[in-house]
Length: 266
Image 1 (cartoon, rainbow, N blue to C red):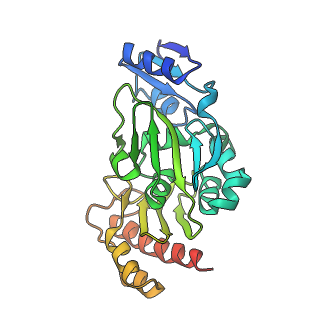
Image 2: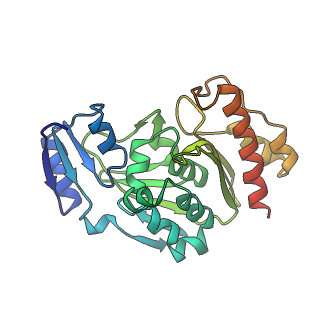
């Protein structure tokens, strides 16, 4: 490693002040991505701002037909929450499938969406459920928040405070996990309420998480398994690596969509 400053803060405002004063700083919560990238010299922040002790960021509560989760809430807490299991069971199931016990006990929901890794699970839940992200400055819809690969709408001195998920029980997430670390090689989140149908895909696109508009339109016209089967994701713009070609991943997305639809209708 190399030398850097470490600052532990107790409030959101203190964290924002540190970011404003030190533009080369990075926020540290779980550190599941940041620490490994620093060890590999892929990131070299001058200062780490530790927000883990900010009590106002660690909570789960129900409010106005939404489940609101504080940004430093870890994956295990989300997966084991009785409130989430009752109100949004698909979200609980998604969190339970993240990584291994160490990652689930250290990694945070705020860190996961702020990093916007193209294979992460939570971005699919945010887009698939139509979540709203509250930051230290404003409130953004999930569609506004996720911009591109490892890129969000967050400004340099802005941090995620909480994520608000509408309570939608007719939803399901299905992914094909990498056998080693369980990241999504292809993951599809489908939700249906009285207003709309949303389908989000992670682990597939070269531009990160996205809404599968063609699939949404097909299901809106006819909520049936055949509507899912008839839509095929094009391999154009799909990631290709040692784990699978773009054609392979596109086909995985098709299969995960069918299984997610079946999960809703079980």
